[in-house]
Image (cartoon, rainbow, N blue to C red; front, side):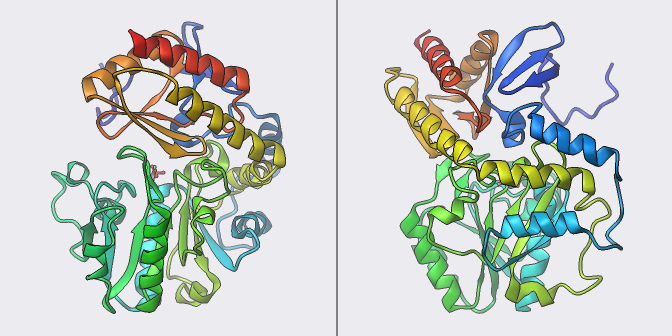
Length: 378
Ligand SMILES: *Cc1c(COP(=O)(O)O)cnc(C)c1O
């Protein structure tokens, strides 16, 4: 008997504690965590700085509503802007950040059409689900927003013909996460961005999974020589506390006046007290270097694994996809890794996805590679 909806396929293990990159289940078995939740606990479990920040805030105030000045929101917004002219709106999740982006894009441009990509993922609420270019996610839920159209990823021709002055925005993931770690080509993004600028089309980058250090920079867009009009963030932003953010260029700020948008819980002090520290930590040279070094260690190590089960290895930073021959092989590999004490994720139908904490050590990556090689040899 369960009192829960069966909308998640849950494993019988329950993770009851964690420290750094290790988590422990109810039977006391330990696992190396190559998931960070799903790219959420990116600074590992029980990070002492984050735990202290949260405990201090717990003893001050938990909730204030957005009817009052909020200096924590100001501080986190400034860190997210990262010396550029962005202003922030805070919410509680990735899907909500994309809802805010959708509303802002329409309000700011007075246009209605939104262009998105095939195999994209932007969330589960109606607007964000409509932006998601996967029929399997939309199936059974009636009509989606009619003004959204989906184009082939990494292909300029088809979308270029549809960039006109009816289009409010284009929304894109720089690495499609959920559908299989597909990296956007830099040349494609730069061309698309340039064409959008010409037509006054807002360029929205969904950095819910790629942001907060995951790909080696605070946001992945920094590696593409562009400055998006709108950026959405969530997942790792508060290392596990619910927090989402939409950043928009200062020039769009006036499109949201009092009453245009809001959230009861959005930008609450508990999550923000942690986010404030997260943003400082991911920018430290220690973490930045660790991401580069552990990323090279992972990609070099994976490339040396000679297994007929590997079709392709993709990604950036510590967002890694290993495409396997088929979904059955993926399931077997993931189960065996779990038996050997390594937790991993799935992306698409046949991609083994690794989103380890950005704090993972050299010895832990070496251990992970050893076990992955052993399992893939089996
Ligand atoms: C996870 C994810 C979302 C949805 O975030 P939620 O917090 O689950 O609503 C949106 N976009 C991308 C790219 C994601 O990876």
